[in-house]
Length: 328
Image (cartoon, rainbow, N blue to C red; front, side):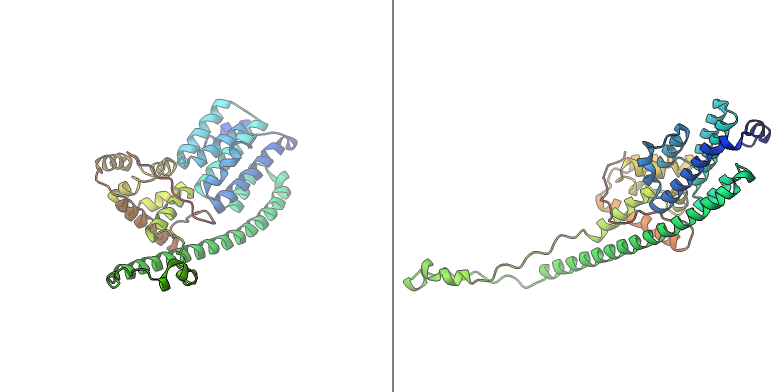
């Protein structure tokens, strides 16, 4: 909303009436810190507890991975339709500005500084204190997230190593010597009766325990690919610029609807139409084709993150198993 005359005519209110808007600004920054650390889907539990209906609607749009500009337009229309002024108008403007910047991925510290501009000099000291508390919490959260990422990376490396070892064992077993012919049956004698042989049978070595089943490396890549559902739509937009249409169509044949919706919202309209055509035409797609395409997109995402062209907000901890659905 760029009509400054309209804003200035409705914005003024007494300092004591700004308290609700101030608390909303603090909550938005807490949501931003959580979304930055754990991904936008981490905000879903707060949809039931957030008291302000306008802020709750904004969080729902963030969870649904709505395009930032579409989100901004929808919230502006709501403000115009509300025809509010004074205290409530300030609250609506703070929420709309905060949620829009949250969806664009603004750092919580920068976001709180920006929202403080709506309150004037009388709230400068309170925002300075809030910034100090936010920085301390963000630093602690970053340390915890780093420890979780390192633990997850170690777990993934061990799982991949175990999968490779399992493949080697299977290859060695398949290429081993042919089995020896069975010995002719021996007629039982008094000396070799079942009763006489019972102690010897009891001393036989038990079979070696089978190693636990470990997912194949390609399955692990597919599991990690589905964690992209926790990333911001802006990161997915950058990723899809380096993914060709055929690879994207093949990869999205085996994802759940929330992940498909995230990728769909990150595409321009012309690529959405092309995607539908490619997916509808892809009848002879096998599971290994889907796994190969998803692995290729995941590797592209990691390369872009290494080049600092995007940030992957992958969840910390154990990899979640993908929920498979055949789309189109």
